[in-house]
Length: 102
Image (cartoon, rainbow, N blue to C red; front, side, top):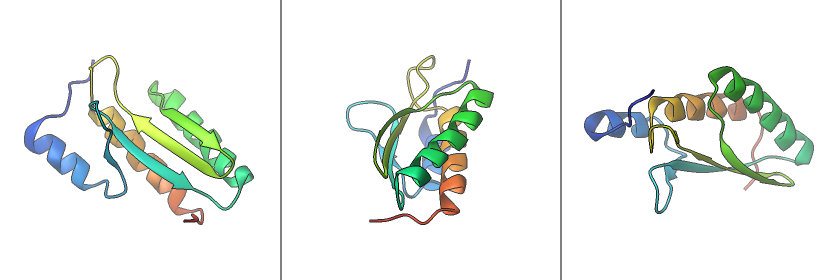
């Protein structure tokens, strides 16, 4: 089981994720992605699903048209772990190849 991130380790991990923020009321991180259209957003979700399944670590997410709202937390650990950080980094890398909209 992964251990929750605390103290300086947590601060360093979060510093590498400038587009993510702490989720209100829980030990989790969240980010909103916006893509050009539904097809691009869905392709991103499909690619993330493959990665998440390999990691056996699945995001909480919500999709409407070109918007994807993601929350990451490791339920077994009761909060934020390196699994969440690793998945967030991979998601950001995938999204970097796609134009985002405001």
